[in-house]
Length: 415
Image 1 (cartoon, one colour):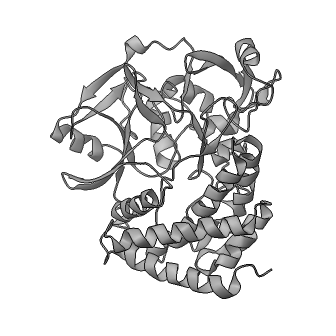
Image 2 (cartoon, helix red, strand yellow; image 1 turned 45 degrees about the vertical axis):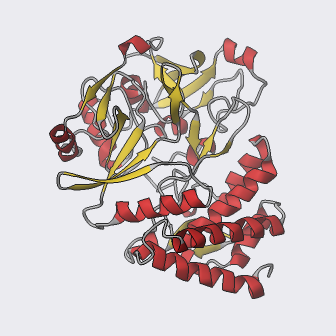
Image 3 (tube, one colour; image 1 turned 120 degrees about the vertical axis):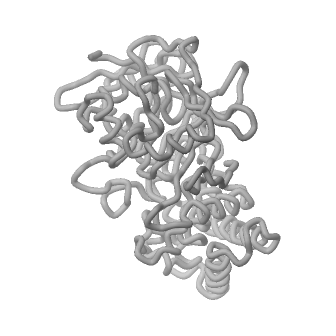
C-alpha cells in the first residue's frame, strides 16, 4: 500500500497526501503549487490554505468518501477498514467530487472507459446498490460523499447511460426514491425546479421510472463539457472548507448543534475568499430564505458547497440536495444551521433572516432584498406551473411564503 498519494488539479500535481499514524493524513503542497499561487490561497480547500508546512487533511479526505452503509460496502469491496480514508482514496480517488484526482501514479486518461447500460442492466445495478454503492465494481475508481442511495452515471446518447470505468469522470447522479418516505425524489425535483427559477441552481433534472424504481437523475454541477471530454470543476462542501470531520463517530458533526458549520461561518469564508463578497453574501441570504421557504431542515454542512473558479477565489455552488423535510413530520424539525439564533425551522421569520445577516456584518436591507426576491421568484414559478400547483411542495411553499412576507412588514428589523 502506498504511503504517499499525489493530488492533481487540472493536470498539475499540487500536493501530496502522506499516511501518518492512527489513520491520520497530512497534506503537503508541492513546490510547483508554491510557485504558482500566493500563500494562503485555497487551492485545494479553504481549510487547507497554501502553505509550505504540512497540514492535517483527514477531515477533507473523509469528505470525499460516502457515509453509512455505502462507506462500509465500499471498504468491504476494497478489503479495507471503513476508517482507512487514505487506503480508500488510494483505491477510489481517481474520480471524486470537484476537480481533484488522487492517485499514487500520474493520472492517465488513456485508461478511461465506459460500459453502456442496457435498460435491464441499469435496473439490475439499482437492485444491487446495497452491495455496490455508487455502482462500484472492480474496475471502478470513483467516490462521492453522501448517505442517500445513488448511482454515478455517464450520459451517452440521449436517454442512454453508462458506467464510468477506471477514473472516467461521471456526469450525472441517480438518486433512488426513499422506500420509507415514497415521493421524496419527486419533492426534491420540485424544489430543484423552484431553486432554478430563483437563480439558485443550474442543475438539470429528470424524473424517471426504471423498472420498479422511481429515480431522480441530476447533472453534476462540478462537471461540464470540455474539449475532448468532460471537464472537472473544483468544489468542496462546507464541512471540508472549515476542516470539520463530519464522519466523527462521536457526533453528527455536519449539523451545527453537533459542532458542524453555521451560515455565519460560511459568510466568513465568502468574505475572505470571494471575488465579490457582498454579492456572494446576498446570494447566501437568498439561500437561507429558500431553505426556510421549502422547509429543508437537512441543509447541513455537507449540503452547502463552494465552487473554486480559480485557485485563489471561491463562490457559492449551485444548490443541490434540496429536500423539503417539513413534508415528513417524523423528520427533524430543528434547522441544520440556525438562522438568527432560531433553531426551529418552522418558526423562522424574516426578522430572524435579518438578524442572521447582521451577524455576517452584511447590510440588512440587502439581505431583505435578496430574501424577498427569492420568495417572489419562487411563488411566481409556482403560479406559472413550473411545478404542479397542487403538489405538496407547492402548497407548503405558498403557505410559508405568506407567513414570511406577512411577518416582514411588522417584524423585520426587530432586535
